[in-house]
Image (cartoon, rainbow, N blue to C red):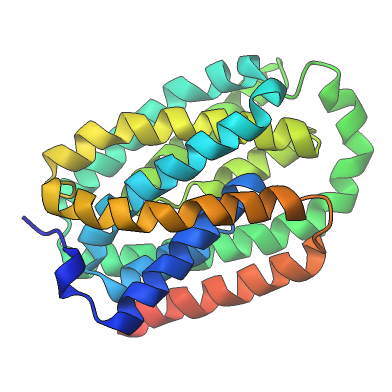
Length: 265
């Protein structure tokens, strides 16, 4: 069993995990994908494989708060389009975790973080071009019904399922898909909230079967979840006030630093 307990942590390590948990709550109700910073912190403080299992219940707590906040704004046709491909990605990610040891998982998380940072930079640069096509994209409810739209949904779904299973890093992938589909802020947050709640809950049996979640890890989660709540309230307050551009720059910088730290450790 490769889990960690509260008693293994120093004061500074616990403070880092508490901050990461607060950031999870904030990201779920304000800036989806910002929890890649939390992922880097968890993987730096804890063993890489164990960090994915311990972070999962913290993410689910944030998902529940996000659903309660934005439940009226979800677009279910988009969700149903994504789920089959996401299931394939989760299955592939589970097989990868069965094969990979802690060093491989740690390196993989670092690479995924750097790739997701690159994806985020690309997404921001494409935002202006996407604005011109959003009106036509939004006319079908937030996702294309054409063959190209189905291919895009399947591609993003598989990649999102794999990255969320291996590293809980599906946020940037799904963010890019939802933005490219023409979602505005509330529709984006509502659809994303239900998507990750359902996907993350479905991952629990896989993580438990891999030995990444047990009673000891859940005790640590129970303490960390306390910090998710104020983060979610802070995000709800900030979502209309935050300087999105500056915050995304900080998230990208922190994600790159976290990814490099994992690769070089």
